[in-house]
View 1 (cartoon, rainbow, N blue to C red):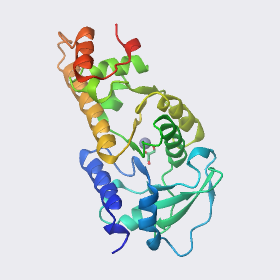
View 2 (tube, protein in one colour):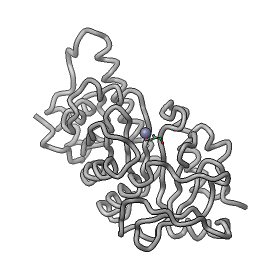
View 3 (cartoon, rainbow, N blue to C red):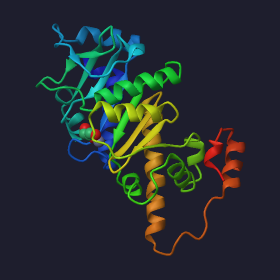
Length: 274
Ligand code: 2HA
Ligand code: ZN
C-alpha cells in the first residue's frame, strides 16, 4: 500500500492521461489541481514526507481554503509523463493557516514546484468553493486547439462565445447552461490573470483564455473533464462548419435553446439570448 494505491490519486492520474490522449497538453502545457477531502488527507498522511518542504508565498491570499490540501501537477512537468512517473510529475501541497503560502508534503521527488498557474488555481478554488458551498474541488487548465482557434475569429465576449458554443451542439445548453466567460489575452502565470479569471469564475464554470486555452471547474474529475471535452467538441463543430466555406445556413434558434432548457430543467442565462 502506498500513495499510488489511493483511489483519488489513481483517478487524478487517469484524468491527466486522458487529457494527454485528447491532444490538449503539448509539451508541459496545462495543469490540474484537486482539493482533497479531510478523509482523503487522512488516508494519505502516512505516506507524506517526514520533513515537509519550506513554505512558499503565493502572492495571493485566499482565507476560505487556508489549511486545505491539494493535488497538483508540477511546474514544467509533462502530462504525458504523469502516468509513467507520478512521483516525479505531481505533488500534494498544504496551504498555511493564513491562506497565502503552500508547502509540498509529497511528490516531485526530483525537486520542483507545483504548476506555474498555482496562484490562479488556488484563487479560483477559493471562488468556486465559496460559490458552491464547498462542492467544487477541481480546476483544470488545458490547451484544446479548436476553442483557441475560435478566439482568433469571434468577438472576445462571454455572450458571443456562449451563444456560438450553445448553438454548435444540442447538449451544450444542458451541460453549461450558465455559458462560458472569456478572459482577454494576458501574460500567463501571474496574479493579474489569476484575478481576471476569478472575476469570471464567480459566474461561470469555465473561462476561455484568449489565444491560450480553457479553464474549467467542477465538483469531480468526470464533470470537469466532461465540461472541457464538451466545450472543445462544440468548438470543433463550430470550426468545422465555418471551414466548409459555404457559410452557416441553419442553426439552433434562440427559442429552440429555450425549449431545451425547459425540457431539461436547466436555467439558461437569459441575457445571452435574443
Ligand atoms: O503549464 O499551460 O498556462 C503551462 C501552462 C501555463
Ligand atoms: Zn496554459
